[in-house]
Length: 252
Image (cartoon, rainbow, N blue to C red; front, side, top):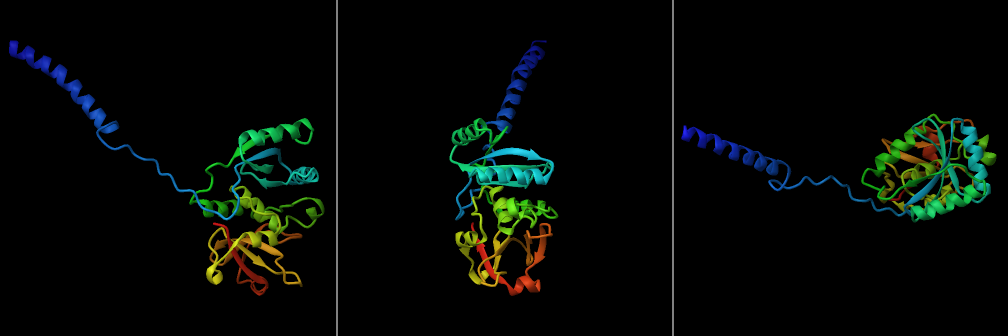
């Protein structure tokens, strides 16, 4: 009986200790902690967007266009885009901190220029997935009769406004005009673009840069062709664009 009692007492002490040891091994000191997979930030030749202001969400693109134009007349460099929710949203600005963005938004709110707003944080946004993210963003616009505003409402969303918007939505402060975008980019060896790079064309008689699109691979690019057309895919082998091709520029 005494041996039986000692055996039970031993088991009562050893089993809990064994369980604690196993727990430490599985979840604590027994093995090295699993490090989260963090992709390094991507270097870019463009200024990064830190914080921006989102103001306005519309189900009708025309309302988004009018609000964008209203802000631009107030010297606010706004742009609109089709959100995955199906609403057209308006954003503007590149601020170094949330405090600075909030201060600017409240000033515009007090002046009656905007209503409700939301501060968008782009900190740590630029990762190795940036090229794929740019392509996905551009593809979301395919089929959209995108419009910039002002006199261009009847002509459709101009090409450089489209590329600027796609880049801004991915945290890159791309200039507004196609010529400025060309100058801001880095030339490519053998002029071979990668996914997410911009491709440029001289479609005017003066042969200056006048059109731009986003390269998506396999000799295809996405662009806003202009009057009467929706954002679409086109081949670089298309005779018109092949004839007027100026080259490509990269920014990362």
